[in-house]
Length: 171
Image 1 (cartoon, rainbow, N blue to C red):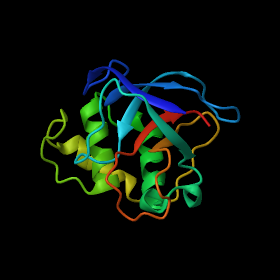
Image 2: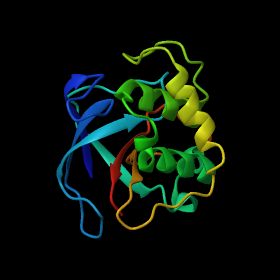
Image 3: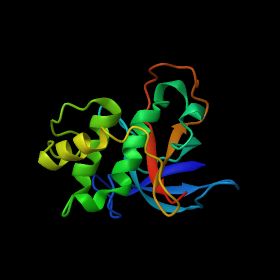
Image 4: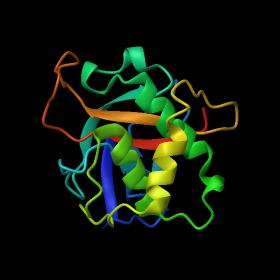
């Protein structure tokens, strides 16, 4: 698939960190070409707005198939738990969701970064609540992260310098 950040950077117009235009989505996926709210896994690595990236596509529901540097079943389960329980946090903001995702995926220090405000009590609550859901699997009609990694990235690399992006889909 091809992944491109379109429009504003942090926040996007669709409720996520950025808006991502997905094209060239092949058959067999639970999503199609379109524009989606998107999130990133690492506050220290950037990705360019308006640049089309050829990406390999992975489901967070099958972490064993993910490249080694992002194959963390417990972390993806927690991300999916948050996506499916946002109603627990009335009035949450996109920045709080992105901050919680950074804390889970990359142990973010909570300081404002990349357009995301500093962590607050809601971020900490999301992270704490997700800790007991390291085996969460969304039910039909729920949400799961679809993970995008730059095409050709060595799946055995332990710490490549790249940004892992993801969107929510109903598997």
